[in-house]
Structure formats: C-alpha cells, structure tokens
Image (tube, rainbow, N blue to C red; front, side, top):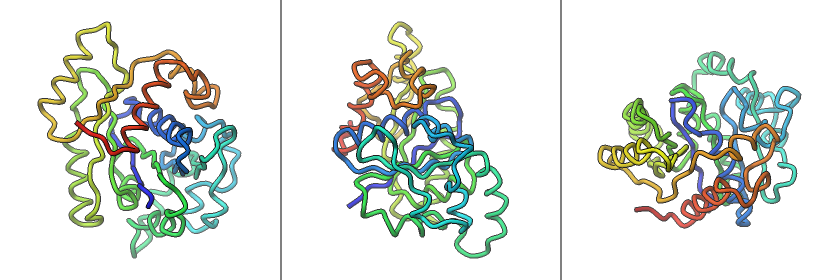
Length: 257
C-alpha cells in the first residue's frame, strides 16, 4: 500500500524542495520504490536530480492538461535505483490559468492520473509550489498527508496557520483522508540560541506532530543541487545526509513524538 506525501509550505526558502529531493533519495536508498512529482513551476526538484528541466518534452504540465500519457511523463532518476520522477519546468506556471477553464473535477486532475500507478510505489512524494493555489490543491487531493518543513528563523510560524487552515479545508471539502504527516525543522544552526528558541516556540504553539529529526544548516546540502545530486550521493557521510536518512526512517516507520 503506497503512501502519498505532499511537502508544502507557502513560505519560500524553508527547505521544501531540499526535503523533497533528499527524503525521496534516502527512502529509495532504503530500498523503497519512490515516485517524485515536481508540482513547482520553478522546477528545482527536477534540476536537483540532474535533469535539464527546460529540455524535457513531457512534464507534469503536459500530463495535467492531457497532452501526454502518465507513462510518458515518468522518468528514471539517473544513479538512484528505485526512484522515478514526473518533472516540471516554467511551463507549469501557465497551468493555473488553464485549469480554471476546466469545469469538472479540476481539483482532482493529478489524483485521477496517479490512481493508475500509486500501487506500484511504496512512497509518492509531491513537491508543492510555494503558494496555496490550484496546483497545491491538486497535490493535497492526491496526497494522504502533508509534511511541513519549517526554517529555524524568527518568522517560522508566519503563514503556518494559513497552511493548516488550507489543509483543513481540503480535508473537509475534497479529501477526507488528508492529515498532517508532521513538521520538520530545517536549517538548524546549533551555534545560535535562535534556532533552539524557534524549535521550542513552535513546539509550544503548534498543536501537531513534530519529527525528532532536525535538519542542520549544512554547506554540502546547499552545494548538492548545483551538481544535480541528492545529498546521499553528493556527500554520503555529511551531517545533511545522515539527517535525511534519519528523517526517511522516521517517515517510513511512521514514528512521531
């Protein structure tokens, strides 16, 4: 039985795509069969796996507009066994407007496609755009749960209440099985008091599950996307790689505090 997890936070720069790339790669490393869906028009998840995003013929854009088949939009990720991707590029930015012209079930277009293959995978990870739009809604109607990365900074809680409200609305109106998978802290700097203060503040104010694994601020994590590699291939022994392996273990086991 597959698990479909959307990674979402409408606030940019919180490690959302970094988490999508490296969680997926570490789940695949643990011999789970994984499909990544890049729902962000920036296509950073796609390029982070080494694809030339603007040269790809069939992406999630063509898929949701019915211009290619699901099989045509799925690509193997080079060097990573057990991992496939439905890529994205800037064309997806136009899909939001084009979806408005669809009268029936426009919130379920992605789900209706993924239903055909979801049992072929242990995990399907969806990288959402940094906004609460129709693309994000499609991701949430497809998903079983939403994983929320939160950066360890002063404005960590900003917008989280809006995101949770959106998740609740989708659950009430479009996808009754949807739940919050949990919150993961990213860009944690052990040298500062701020990071630990943010963690404590979020734990006190957010009534949801929080992963034990905390992702550190790590140079190797920042470098890996420019090489088109997940962190476990770019620097397998780095603190970032170990952290994402731990997060993958928690996600796979459904562990929480």
